[in-house]
Image (cartoon, rainbow, N blue to C red):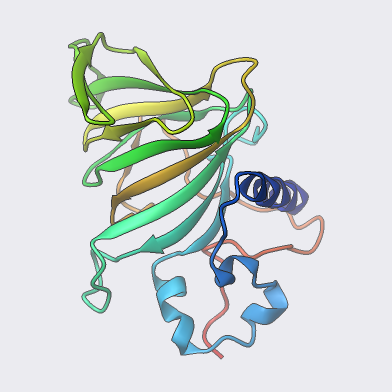
Length: 225
């Protein structure tokens, strides 16, 4: 991705977050220059990859396939220093944009429509890495029911779905309804090892530096001062 694309996505997400009156923690507003002055008291952010994360999954077409997200809090399954057993994210999906089919090996998560258009989550069971054909259990806002494989579960603002390990899912938006601010409440998040994409792709983009960064991404922080 070009840095200019990343900067644009961050600014658009900041505007969407503001529109739906969600206040971000202070570290989301640090500039690259401020990060150069931060000491080891901010190691939790560095070690657990809190903060901004913009990805095109290495496909080079962010407007069609991508996500802008912020990890607000997170534990660390690989480091006993960090005791949290949960994570929280905010995500922005723009109308016309999708996030690809995948599941998590360990993480269960609630995906919440925090505001905007109608979010669609297509669901499948994992069948030894393939998209299963059996009916899929949907747990949504206290209701449990089954749907045929591949069903697009619609989430209107305020609605949510629980996604379990080995439950394939993707993200889409109902045409004509607008961009969506998404919440995620989950077990600890590890984007380096816990994602299984149905089609092989990357998670973090290579960046073409065509302009200075507006915010640093969660894998770009300098060492403690």
